[in-house]
Amino acid sequence: MQENPANAEVEESIVKVNMRNAVKEIAMKVLFAVAAAFFVIAVLTICIYLLIDAIPTIAEIGFVKFLTDDRWLIRSQRFGIGSLVVGTALSTVGALVVGVPIGLLTSTFMAFYCPKWLYNVVKPLTNILAGIPSIVYGFFGLTVIVPISRQLFGGGGLNLFTTSLVLGIMILPTVISISENSLRAVPKSFYEGALALGATKERSIFRTMFPAAGSGVLTAIILGMGRAIGETAAITLICGNIDQIPSSLADPFITLASAISSGMGYASTSNLERPALIAVAAVLLIIILLITTIVMLLKKKKY
Image 1: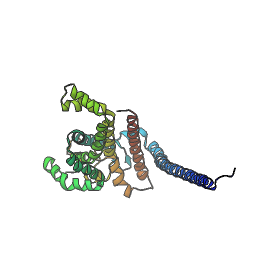
Image 2: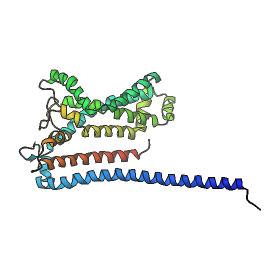
Image 3: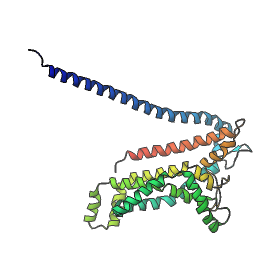
Image 4: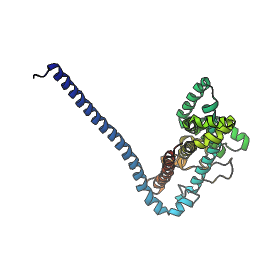
């Protein structure tokens, strides 16, 4: 029995299409693998480069001295990051004090109270706030917050108060967006069930929805903290860059990131100046990696 030519052509066409699709699939897999490999290699290269330079430098300075000495005097060859770590920690805490309550309340409003027409305005504004370059926040701090700080505390206005306020504003988009998404990810039956049991709207939100979205909200806070710790451009403009541990909101200070930014441009390679700054960068990288690891562990938890 002779095969129908039309059927043969159809089968041949199907085979060609399947082969073409298979080739495309293999090509895309290779492309994705190359992209992933490039990302992994880039991260490993950065880590290895910093650690190779940082470990001998820290060993030469002295591990305990490097971490605990509170004097960072490049020209005097005294490299202690105690004041840098404390300054970074205090400014981060200040940013969380400002940004977390406002961010959580805003996310609650957007998730449960905000009318649709207003949501369509607030949500894009939040995204715009996230996209503003950090140097713009720094200039905002210089022109708006610094004069207010001078009126409140005297002095030059470049201090912990100004830095905390600007950092608090900068972390708002992160806290708001992730917290809102976490609250919306909780099944509505939780909220409706609490209302059905006689709870008020506010009690249903804060006693039912927030605990259910706890890991997501905590992730938002930790990511905001990571943004505050690693911020450089804005902080270099408004922290004062004075090597001291601030004892009040009115005191200027210095952070890990701002020390690198302000010192790397003129650091000498003939002594420990440049290697010490690279060691500071390695410490900052380790802190950020620890924060990222915590976030990854939290994301494994279900709402």
